[in-house]
Amino acid sequence: MESKLNFFQKFKKFSIYEIITFHPKEFILNNLRDIKNKKLLTVIFHYEGNNKCPHKMILQIKQDKPINVIRFSPDNNLLAYGSTKVVFLHIVNYYKLNIFSKVELKLTGHKDEVVSLSFNPKSDLLATASWDKTALIYCVDIKNKELYGKQLAKLTHHTKGIMSINFSPFGTYLSTAGEDEEVLLYEVIQDKKLIVQCKQFIKLKEHKFPVNASSFCPRENLFAVGGVGDAVILYGVNRFVPNFGQILIKLNGQFLNGGVNSLSFSECGNYLAVGCWESFVKVYGVNYIDQENYGKKLLNIEHKGVIYSVAFSPCGNNLAVANVNRLILYNTDYYYDKSNYGSKKMEFNDHKKEIYDIAFSPCGSYLATCGNDKSVRIYGQN
Image: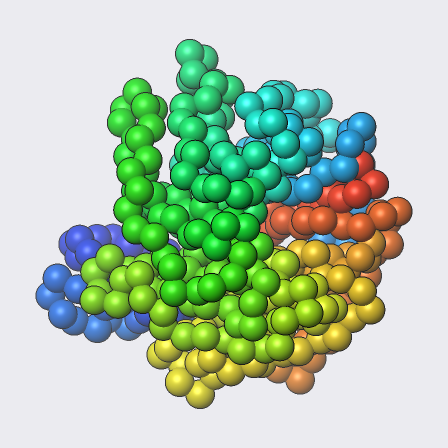
């Protein structure tokens, strides 16, 4: 067994590699394909993440309008959430009793509801999407006093509202998807002075439905698209292989009654959770190395009412579901606790109206929710 540090020191000589399979639990099996030298490497090392589940509401933040979307930054230092025309930003300080600061920043560039947010991997950029057909990119690097809070780019290629925006896990791409059935991938170019350029790289157009949700696989080799249609589409987005921009698999699951509201990949990239308007939560295997489960529906949980959002915990052993005004946590530890796979762990009923979005902090210590009752609620382990 090797530590993460020894692992990366041992294989840092390989300049280009692709993570084929990855299970972040107690032990990780990584198959690394060195594309340059065409070799397959296998290593086992220990995962040091947080496997515990948030089980108590520790904070409530009230606003004067419903809150549509919420996200933590990858470095754990920022919390952002979007409402009507405004994005609010809080600093997260883990060394103080009141870990979430008052509103640090208000971003007011949109003219309609802000419905999607995404931080880049460095946590110095925040992309926002709105029903006003635009996507904006802001500098949220607190250390950059000159540009902090300023708009760096504006994307206006959609003809209808943008419903989903995502930075890719490595920061290579920015995706936008909307009601006009367009899914656009931009190449993000960022210089040392944080000047950002977004060049339209490719248009994914094999699907034929308005898009409500989209998500990159953490390995940046898959891109999932779901909406008002009869399937979830998975595109190949690994630029080093020939199937870039092509459909790799269609996950058919009777999504017609309102379609898909939310998509979430597990951190290992082996599973995709789908939240449906028709009250179902479905989990599929999407790792093509695991042919036994590839494209297979592993979990199907029916609820009463709409599923607005789903999110895997960083370790992948918990799945959070926003079902109307209920927050439910399910066991999704497929390999180490298969007998309890899909069982309910906890349920919270703190919100008075619909929960629109949920997000785990990257460290796994906190779970944030927001919704139609104009509140943000933070759940923790203490």
